[in-house]
Amino acid sequence: MLHRVLRRALAPLILALALMPGPPADRALAQDACAGLVAPRLAAGGMGRVSSPYGVSLKDRPNTGAAGAVEVALLPPGTVYVVVDGFRCANGYRWWQVRLSNGTTGWAAEGDAANYFLEPYVVGLDLFHPTPDRTQIAHTFVLPDGRAEARPPFPVAPVEATPADIWQSVEIERLIPAVERVRQACPQRQEGTPFAALASADDALHLSLPPLDYEVFPAPDGSRLLLVRHLHLLVPRCDNALPERIGISRVSVLDADGTETELFPFAQHSSIPPSEDAYAADTLDAWAIYLDEIVWSPHGRYIAFVAAYRDACGETDCYRFHMYVANLESGQLYILGEGRHVAWTDGGERLVFFRLVTGAEGRRVARLFSARPDGTDRQEIWLPGGAVYVSATQTALGLPWNESGTRVMVGNAGGTDEVMLFTLADKSFTPPVAVPALAMPLNRLSVHLVQGETAYLWTTIRGDFVVQNVRRGDAAPLESALGSTGVPLKWVRPFASGETVLAAMADGTAYVLDIGADTLTPVALTR
Image (cartoon, rainbow, N blue to C red):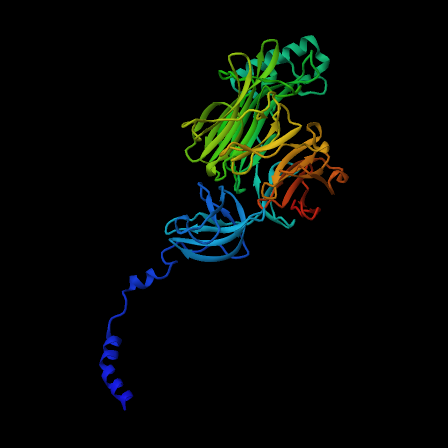
């Protein structure tokens, strides 16, 4: 009886509540933490890369520091990772759990309401090799497991020109006396060269230049190539077995359809910019002027160049190194002055570089600088003593920067028999470790940071590999080696995962080295 009375008494209240309007639409959306955020592009099990030029903070849980999450690591631009789990949304960000190549795991924000900080990424490397007639550059995209995907080749048009057509006057004025000198003093040196059939030295101006003598340097995404054409003649000399190189080089950006956009030319005998730093010449057949370093920015908007100029320093030859940056969006060429051993940092928005400066007492001191691509906002980064940062000779030390330009390998205590990693942010060094005997400079092709920057991979000119722990220094030669192929090894480049590397051979063949598994997989290249 009481139950029925209560039901009748509560009925109007229940009806009134049922008829009350629900919460506004915006209040309902506010309860969805993902509402209004950028759409997810990552997927669990896939690969990703840090796209923010400022890097991304890796947290111990999917939340901000203000909400109590602790930073596990700061991921520089370009860091590659495996997506483990997610997503979760909290405090205005979409979070994914990721694992780095060194095993570190944490949560990273993919983006907020307006911007992405992470992006999907297919781990692979672009391999380019000229066809036998050099009128095309074959393009292959190689995956870490050795599979390869053919991409359309880049056509390269032959140059049909003579010195009279395209050389600068400084080279023309150098050519005629050089040819006349050989004709008069040592005519036998002309045998077997184009100069033997000339009626006069002036006729050298009408010799055909090499139509397809070039080098290429790929953009980070493989969509363009930096093309350096060498339009030179090699003139015999009476007092030297090596010929004199006379002519110009043209530096251009080559698009996939064969379009060339010239950036600048340089002549072998151009004037040398005013210089203070001097580096001892140590190569007999080096060019008078050459591009010693060519470094694309990660986003492909800029290319940094280090030009080497041969000069006379007292009674001996020396080299001067000057930096230039091409802005591919505006077409401008920035002149940054002296410097070498360059790297891009801040996602390609700043450049870091070294100088070896002679002080008042004649003591040479390494100095490190950073600057914007146009050379403005130059700042010096203090360097601790007790390390060798940059070579004092024409030939570089060959010790690498990491991909983000935040760490660099240096020598220890006045030499390079021991090496360390120097971190710019906190001026810290890893413990010095002895360079493996197999990888001493005369035997060395390159060294790279691999496995999440926890190991060095030393590569010899014969194609042997040695893996060394960065901190402990224990080194292990791999059984995998390329010497038995009988083909010279041209270069080695790590995949972004840091667990595999691509080894390109001089004949255009290639192999993928799996460091952990110690295996070599031939790459099926397209011809």
